[in-house]
Image (cartoon, rainbow, N blue to C red; front, side, top):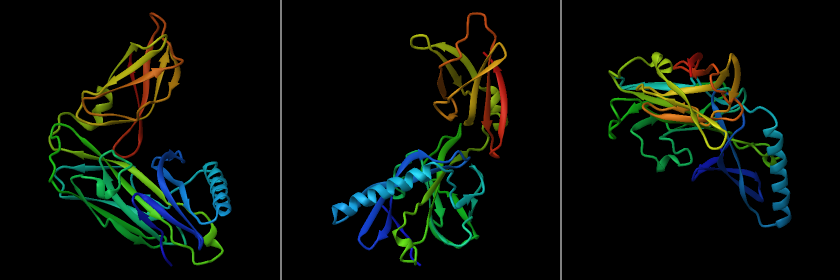
Length: 298
């Protein structure tokens, strides 16, 4: 049983003896899970017959439409929704599990610095991850070891954020009939926080320390600004502005505010009148992946 191979950031899928499809990553989230899964969708076809090219393009489009209409779940499951690396630790481990009941997966793992579209060999991060590529049998688990190499200076007065990527590649079908089907590889990408020693304050107190205020925007819009004076990143699950006790949820433009940083959200429907009582109600995701509810006056 062979595996599909990753080349230059894409996946080569063997669809038939006459066709080869290269799939390249997009940033379209297809499942509302705690782990974001990106679908690798078709980019171009190397075919010698135009009619077959059209047929494959239509087949791929129909398959993608059907897939996007249903929830998708990666077979390779990470045992956490974020990784915390304390500076004093020599190494940390992350557990992976192949939830597929009958087939193995080829797993590739790497760490990026926020450049999600770069290939592993294009990245320069101060971490060593082993094994970078491994075969995981059906239902089995594997631990990833992450070691801070210290060959690149990181801030000592605040957290730094990186991203752990795990790509699960399905095997090439042995059955000739199944080789004409379109199969997908899923990439899971979660945050990795490098946490220096002796940071001021506690991570649990960071959400309460956020500073919120309303600012005039362009035209009739109002802008909600949040500033983070702490040394820790704060990740949001959602934000709502309540006017006179009535909550009006607003879509986030960013999911996290960095240490010493700020973010702004445009209020599209909640427009506070002069003298109105307003407060912000927000949920954050803590170190354990749990949602915590907080409120703050405006």
